[in-house]
Image (cartoon, rainbow over all chains, first blue to last red; front, side, top):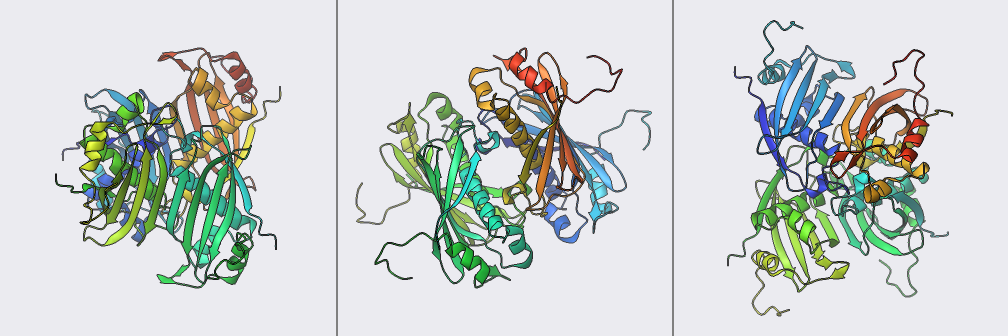
Length: 144
Length: 144
Length: 144
Length: 144
């Protein structure tokens, strides 16, 4: 298993920007989510399927750190990795860079599987796909 | 019956703007819809009720004309009137002005009542409330 | 000159949708604008250039008609054509269809070139590119 | 000095929601920013002033934790406090609750004053206003 990150890219569009001339901070998280949806598509497990049949995969935590402003028209590369896969939740890391590899931002989302209002086990198909983009742990890392 | 328009106002917030420094064009329609939702609230017929029990009231046409740029922090007044109420649809007009009454923009949305994928009659309660903000027609106007 | 429309496509993402389960009406216009920005990119005249050096090309009119709901995950095809090119303004038409060619929606935006608050002539490079996607007029159509 | 939080409230509008029927995760951060803008307005230091005269106050970190879904039409109360005020940066905490005080979510934004691309000192007027909503530290808390 390669554990290579899932690659995505987007161009900063006018609707992503604000009056400061750069990406509006929380629209970076919209772009992160778009990368996550593209990952689910590529895995043959599109988000609309989970919406329809469950479990739902709501976000319980999201965060972003900004290193450099992202201007209108900039092509942004996204590398999507899993930082953790648990029984009923998973954590995704997003690295945003320029075409030249310069760091722009990073983000993280934590998702919990929910069925009829209760925490549920992650479906095995989804768990396998997320495990495939799980970041290599350092040797000796604690097993969770 | 007064046929006075429903009044709403908002302040242009950073999320409404884009890199041109003013409101991003289609966010004016988001603000128009917010005025429509506030109108439904004030009428005791909130949108979530229609979402839950039906009929749905999807927009089949929307348009906006822009007279002046709306900058971050500007207080915008919205006057919401009904231009037309039919058996199963209605048309809303929105006028956007400054505090001083200077025109900024106008918009229009056309809504059709839909039940299980089919056009449905407007509920009488909703029809009455929309009629209450119906613009006075000129004498001699054709009856539709 | 081919006068073929500019082609674009997108997938309806979660951020495009609302609690009715389909695309939020004005986000279709955001997608239309994204198609317009992609067109400018392909023409070598990206929007950020106009933002920086002028003229600005603000939208003075926008409209959309909705034929069918657009659900999460749907691939939407956009055909972008120019309906009119004037001395200082142009009108763009957008047709939204499914992969199978079924009509979903249409939209229109009208842009005016503005320099230091005054209407300005369209730069010739831009005018040429927009003319290249100008819809064929019927024979005998009046020359404007 | 009261150190009372700044109070804000909003109603979850259709544009805030997504196909899951509740607030789209990152729009909570848009609402947090709206509360921050309202705080700046009430302090007589509106965001547009900083945009125009500087320093800019870009967000370098943002995060949100979600406790309960926020449905269309829900009135959400926001309590805005400062968690930290430094020489050139400040950290804001947002608590989101129902009208009954039930917790819905929390968020945090970290802002850094920037002038011509360089970190700058916070203007004293702004620093004073943020200090006024600074959370009381526990006795013995480390001075930063």
